[in-house]
Length: 59
Image 1: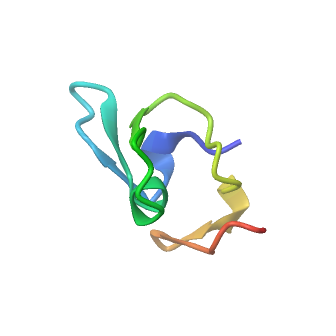
Image 2: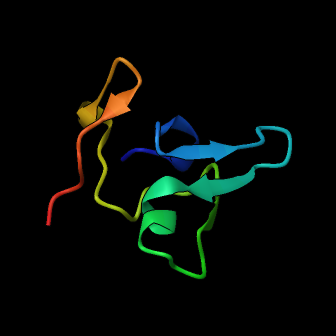
């Protein structure tokens, strides 16, 4: 499973461990901050990441 810190849709501070998920922000969710070590709950998988880009999550 892909961790937030490894996803191209996540931008955060490695020093702090928390950052914003672009997919959650796009849906205007209140809880868009995630922990970098958290497993992705957006349906992204490691195989979907290619050259720093990821495919859209299924469904």
